Amino acid sequence: MTAKLRGRIKERDNFACAKCGISVAVEPHLLLEVDHIIPVSRGGLSVEENLQTLCWKCNRSKGAKLTEATGGLKMKNL
Image (cartoon, rainbow, N blue to C red; front, side, top):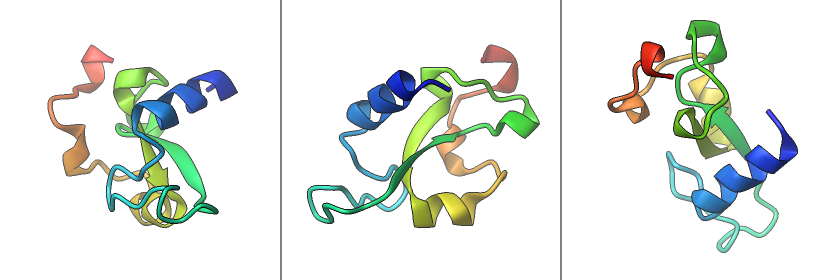
């Protein structure tokens, strides 16, 4: 995943965590990470539709699990 793609995802998600909602507006030194909704280990790709912004805490708790955030995403569609 390129730095440019990571930047686009964070901007698209308004620099806020998709899970808990915390943002850099509230916490300026917040560490935000770009996460695969469907993990690479489960066939997920590094495409915008499969990426989300998470704070470091939410990302660590997610690991390689599939969450409700997958919505209508299917591995074969990515």
